[in-house]
Length: 398
Image 1 (cartoon, rainbow, N blue to C red):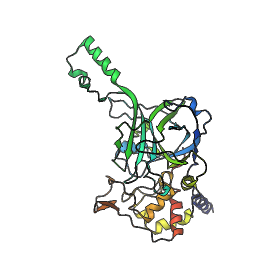
Image 2: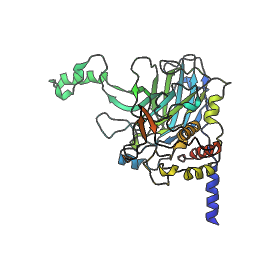
Image 3: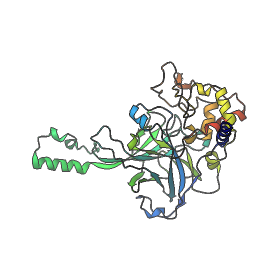
Image 4: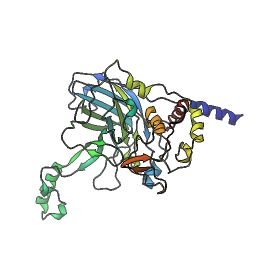
């Protein structure tokens, strides 16, 4: 009887496909957003919303120690506020982190805490947003990254080649060497903030044409980080002048060797600037149709578990991407599109840990074609059920 009761409770929990976090309401202000940090007065009156960041587990990381450190990661909840004026929009994200990790330039095993804010270049159709975290071909994502690093030196574009050498390779000694090191130190920076355009794995291109006016910052205190980003409402890559815009957030934990794809990230979240058009909000935060229990049965019956690791308790399966957290950082429309048109979004680059005989896609006439079967033949109700089930696949909140 106890076993039957436990089973019924598990099924009841599974049947409740939890929708994404609620939309973020941005506050219109008149103050300048050119220089913003966590202590700025611009946040007075802004409403904070909760967002949930899930451990990215689609592809196994190629680092045994890092995988061990992150094997039992839970989801992280953060608070986000947004403000905007006629020219810019700014975000403040606050998330818990028990340790402050600063990347050291003279160490190869030092990793930074950090965060990123991501925009979709084209969001006219909410059903075709970029692949979360990195964009996809034809669906660019603009990603603003901030990392906590110690002072680092890199060529600054001013032709200062005389200072771009190791001090030990100079003919300077004592006072002259101290002067040289002091000059180099003035050229160094501890503010690591960069912006990228992404269209899939290994496709990140840093924006260096001067069109990006974004600025970001980080501050640590009381075992938590506060990160801010201020960005133009319109530039060469995005136009955020709309009733609502899709935004995604990511954080890295240096203590757990987090970097690149080893991070926590949200799904696309609607940020509301003006009332009246709920199209994006409904697409990203609306009620999830379908029966998750029936969806699990359909997923098993249609062979999904043959290629994908669906739940954390399932054995790892490298024939296809892991779906253990797919419900946390994927939208309903993306999951539906993946079922009925799996070749619509195929990011470049195989999983290097997968067997060479089980390629995730083939290239036909220059186009990547997914090896996943097309399920557009299924009844809509069955598709809805599977999507509802997939949305339950997410880590518990820490």
